[in-house]
Image (cartoon, rainbow over all chains, first blue to last red; front, side):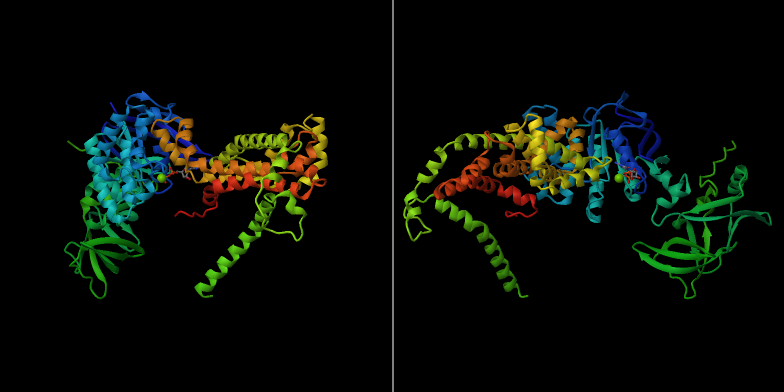
Amino acid sequence: MRDVRLEGIVKQFGKVRAVDGIDLHIRENEFLVFLGPSGCGKTTTLRCIAGLETLDEGRILIGGRDVTHLPPGKRGIGMVFQSYALFPHMTVAANIGFGLRVKGVDRTEIDRRVRRAAELLQLGNLLDRYPSQLSGGQRQRVAVARAVVVEPQVLLMDEPLSNLDALLRLSMRAEIKRLQQEIQATTVYVTHDQVEALSLGDRIAVMSEGKIVQLDEPQEVYDNPATVFVGAFIGNPPMNFLTGRVRQDAGRLFLEGEGYQVPLSPEAAARIQAARIDEVTIGIRPENIAVSLTEPEGGGIAASVIVSELIGAQRMLTLALGPHTLKVTTSTEFLPPPNGQVWLTFDPAKIRLFDAATQARLAQLPKAS
Amino acid sequence: MPLWLRRTAHYLLATLLALWTLIPIVLIGLAALTPRSDFFTWPRTIIPSQFSLESLRFFVNSFGVLRSTGNSLLVALATVVLSLLLGAPAGYALTRFRFRGREAFQTGILITRMFPTSILAVPLAVTFIRWRLYDTLLGVTLMHVTLALPFVVMITAGVFTRVPKDLEEAAQTLGCSRFGAFFRVSLPLILPGLAASGILTFVMSWNEVFAATILTVNNRTLPAQIMGTLGASPLYFKFAGGFFMILPAILFIVAIRRYLINLWGVSINK
Ligand SMILES: Nc1ncnc2c1ncn2[C@@H]1O[C@H](COP(=O)(O)OP(=O)(O)O)[C@@H](O)[C@H]1O
Ligand SMILES: [Mg+2]
């Protein structure tokens, strides 16, 4: 087994609780991504797993073995640093072979494995170069090769793509995914880039202020954010939020806020009632709002276009709804009218409900069967 | 200013500076290699009629010179070892750890250099007599270590800042212990810097005359020995002594000049 178990881990720096009680089971061969804004404790969590930080509380198990008090070299991990941390006085070959040399593997075996790792990462013709003679992308690949050549049980990566330009990042992302499938290592990957997280992760652990706020598969994190924070952090443009009160009108339920009324499904109404709250925040993704130039049958929500931008395959509208601002994506053919007046329809199935006070998602009702 | 003018001024200044240091050294060197008889001819020539090792030989064989040269070597080497042993870990700590009083420590190190040795001379001599360190090589060594430490700490701290912490951490994740990581990764990277500060210390101790003169009577280092006999010596003896003193320093500096230049942030090779 090559799984990783974090049990109530806490790491404090003075008064800052960088890691504030994390419980997590990372499955064998899983690609787990820690995602969160800068300073939320991702790197510190990763360094705790690596053994570069000593825990203040909790324990860590790798492959069922308690490694809490073991030094990094004895944990069966490989790590790729954000800065790559290549040894400047060693050639690429010596860098890649470093871990094997430390472990006392014999020379012909080192040579063989370095060559194989170099091939895997397309570094074959660079083995005699020094790190200073490599491009950013090549350095990044050397750092990965150096970490995987020791065949770690767990591969740790701290924002490995953040120092690359956009185009290179895209190709390296695919490369890393392919590599992970090839070497079958349990992988823990840290990033603040939600696109990276969505595309790479088997599961994503979204972090905020030292805690995991949601642990789910990418699609679920995107579709059903656990909190307002997660919805606002993931997606580009992010989820729209409106806060208001529930009101009944002619047998139909509405969320009413300043300058708008959003119709709610009976199911949504039931959930709000079950939660016994007054104020509700609804969240809806930009692509789940339909925009039309004329008022649709059954009523729409009037809004006015502030900005219309072409963003490649789509058009992004920034709309004013009373005092609120919404982002909506439409097809590129949609052209806002001169007076900016449009009507919105929220897809009722895609409206997400949050408690306005706690910012947490409202509980799903048990299905009546 | 046009480029050619700037460049000319630049080279002119460099040449002046170089001449400023070189001329005395060359003159001393020439005088030291002048046969003794030339000193008594008139008019005196700058370039000797023939080169001769006569004066140097006389100097080296005169009373106390060989012994004090040995003393100087011993003191200088001991100073290098001790000040590196004490100073390098201090420099390492200054760059790697954030501890209470770090800034104060850093300033304190520099402040020790603000007291002229001459002010400290009498109390120092008294203390050394009390501690039975007076007129011992150990006493002189301790004094030289004290003088050298600020430089060693500052230079090694500067060298360590250029070895990022995550290099050692990367080595640790690859199976090294803390010490192993230091020896395999950091040490090779800082070795040139350590060598440079070691040699700087050597030259400093080799040339240091004031403290050595005050703290010793019989067990003198070379500069103190020469100082002691200088007043009563003939001219050719002085030149030979001067040249003998300068030579090792120059050889060392030439040997390490690449590292010194690296240390000061300029490089001739790249
Ligand atoms: N060595 C350290 N000393 C003091 N505070 C630290 C240290 N490392 C991290 N922190 C603090 O811990 C918090 C989490 O940092 P980090 O794990 O680096 O965040 P992230 O990688 O998510 O950007 C931050 O507030 C940061 O300032
Ligand atoms: Mg980080």
